[in-house]
Length: 188
Image (cartoon, rainbow, N blue to C red; front, side, top):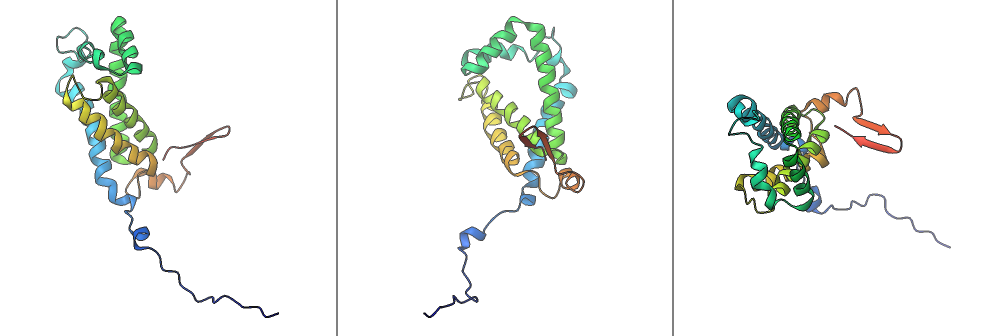
């Protein structure tokens, strides 16, 4: 019986499509702009037009709920109806929503706990999209915010921040995971 040995010097050529990839570090401008969008939404309400968060002002942003609600998709519509029936909780919701926008924006700008911030950004954006219905019947801006910012945030939810971030520094000292029983959550 003769045994044949496979040649060891065979080089398998890779498909050129497989080698074309974009490093995560090239996406930092997208992360920066996305973070700026969320941070500027906070600034528009707290710095530029604080009357939007004044419950008794005519320009209060909660008035948009009454125009958005008829077009909202069912899970968000029920929440909006409940908030309209409980106006002081609607005010607390808007304050919380605005500060979450601030946190998401700041964390995306700096690349701090990027995946957690991206989850928040995704939920905020798609909440805005579903709150206005798919076609943005109350305002076309909400449709653009929901789609573009939502998809942009999902990119960072899946891939993280890359090397130009605080997360990159955090990984030198902590793996970025939170373990709750069998659940392993990757925050950075």
